[in-house]
Image 1 (cartoon, helix red, strand yellow):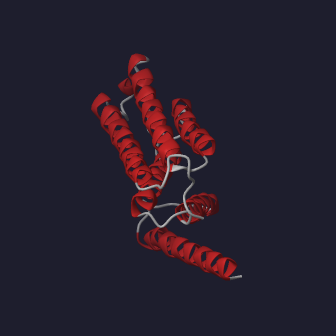
Image 2: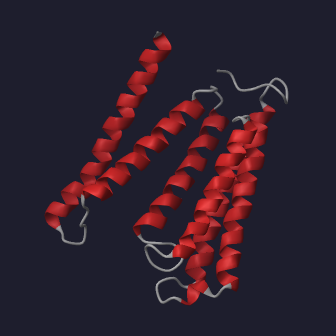
Length: 192
């Protein structure tokens, strides 16, 4: 009963935080024409924010280890920002560019890795390293294909942005590895 009440309170906090965050573009729309969101934009942003928040709560609740929680937070923040950039402005080229769909493969590597690892820290470290490798591979493919020649995305922007995501995924892997060192045994799952 206590776990249900705690989970309910967490979900309410996440929904309220999402509503508060979505007030920013709503208020901005009142003062400038630069921000022009429609109902679908608010729905997608809300779903991404709530989904990311709930996923963090479910994964981080498995343990009290601060390194594990930080690793989950960094990985989810990177995935959220990657999805947001893909949908809002585009990473390779412009918004809606089909080349950006390669980044869904990056996220699939992370998700499949997390499922295989069953959220255990050592396995999650490997999954996030594979995700970083996939992220770097997308940048290499885009460079080989000559995609950053578009006037919207320059080569330094493409390399820098992908490098940032690689660093975030590697940082998350490092935090998971740190969390794995504090586990009683290599085969033990986090408390939960």
